[in-house]
Image (cartoon, rainbow, N blue to C red; front, side):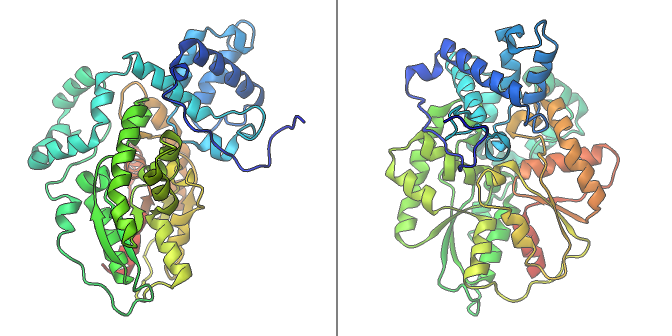
Length: 442
């Protein structure tokens, strides 16, 4: 029986990327047409990202006022504007499976990009930027030089970089560090023997960004866990594959999933809980990997066991209780709920965790930052990223808190840059676990 909308929990199909029909151009075009027509009749997602306004404007401005008036070559504009944030699927669309319309907009955009990748239509710059693990290793020995060359202060250099690569000269790029997270974590942090959670063991997935670009997040996690009596190890067996997923290289993601899951299994056998410090990477381990390599037992086991770092701290608080010593944080905290944290379907764990801090004002921002991997730095898409960021930036200014944090480091950095470029005082970007470490005085 046909129903308008659905009250059932959304489900996702296995991604059939090995099937030649998956990247068949005519099949993709037909599915884009089917889905876009459904979206046109609903329009519930108009305010989520630029894909939907672009689609609806093209339809409204067409000769017929319907999808049949839009040239199919224009469909690519909608595909290019999607950041694969999953918010339409998770929070808005009433037609996701098990509804009979069977609509999964983000994974359809992924399918279209997989076809582009197969056909060699992905720009070289995008493919090279996706090699985050390699880039981090190359930059580590020359981090000060790499950071100087990528700085916005080097206006001539950034203008040349923009002309050669398409990277917007005004976009602030991630900084590299000479002492990575794995380097710093060699100095063991003493465990608190009096903490209620003594006996827990956690193995931390450093992630590319956490290891090479922002090790302070991982160090904060290690310190907070040690304060709470949790024995920790930290590993970085490779990139989770999210940057490759964004441009449709699904085979590369599959290979990374199998390799990284195999590296985690010995730790799970020893009773360690797998914990991830970056939201996008946690989403990959939890949900994307099992859909890409559904028959891999290691991936399934890891997916069922993995925690986001905020989720893990909240679990400790609920199960054993947190160690004493948390102090108020002056000036309040604005917590940006990153799309890839929300898409984990675990609830607002960053906010729940920070509300455990005594006498601390915590405000939640549930609007997209607009960044989305390379989306926020490429000249072609950066205007969309800036536009999408505006509602979140307005809320940050209204809250007027001293601190801003997000589970997504790129989202937080992007929001701070937008505020700063508007000439307003901007808080320093941080991760929620860094706020916990600050509260503990670590």
